[in-house]
Image 1: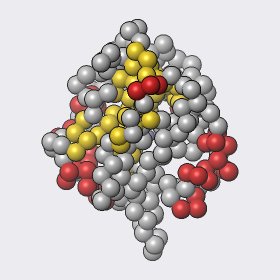
Image 2: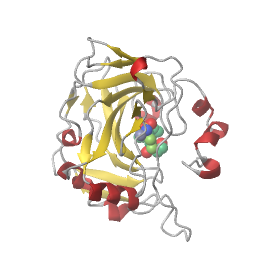
Image 3: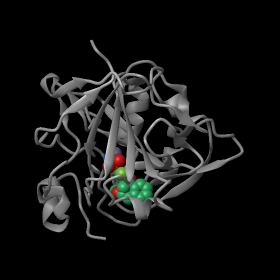
Image 4: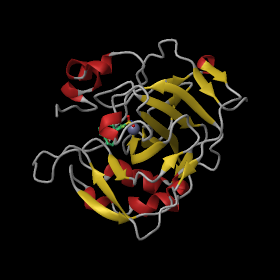
Length: 263
Ligand SMILES: NS(=O)(=O)c1c(F)c(F)c(S(=O)(=O)CCO)c(N[C@H]2CCCc3ccccc32)c1F
Ligand SMILES: [Zn+2]
């Protein structure tokens, strides 16, 4: 497809010339400013099913040039939304080795070190994610803020393999594990709003759920994520580091952000 980047001439300010939705409404990410938030007592805790994958399953870990992504089996799903949303993949957004802030969503302007997204599609209405990706009720993404803190053994279940996918389009198989261990303890506190893919083609097709509580990984783990990967192919002479892969906050367009927590 048409190439795009996070910086330079193909950067986000030019996405809309090749991807018109990127210049449209209902774009993501956004800044969760206090005045946009509205408490909704009817928002139920997020419930996920079959996240505890068995270790004899294998997942594909790949560098797609924009992020590091882990493929997920569609028997994993979210059961607490109006429709069943089945998992497709998870990926990350991060800053760089000297800019330890690379989350996409922000809270009153605070940017976290990084952000993980678990992408699901409405498997009740669509047979696969390609058919769902551009539909208004097609996708549901779970967002998790990442902060620098204690070492996180759950993330090392695949961070330790990143040297095998240093370059764009490289992929390896890794043993599956319990994906629930990547999520924060509390799944009852989250931000909820209607938005879009944060990369081209920016379809406004995402029901966003961003958990209030961040997870932590160690500085060493973060630096591994922020410095291990290249956006360029292995045979290219000019290496392009893969970092700073986060879109800036978009206009809220008087959207309301629902929150499941009061204080
Ligand atoms: N932040 S975000 O909006 O959640 C988000 C990303 F940031 C992101 F980089 C990706 S990508 O890694 O696929 C690279 C660019 O599409 C995706 N992919 C989704 C949407 C596009 C089609 C597709 C097909 C199969 C599986 C996942 C996806 C993405 F949804
Ligand atoms: Zn993402």
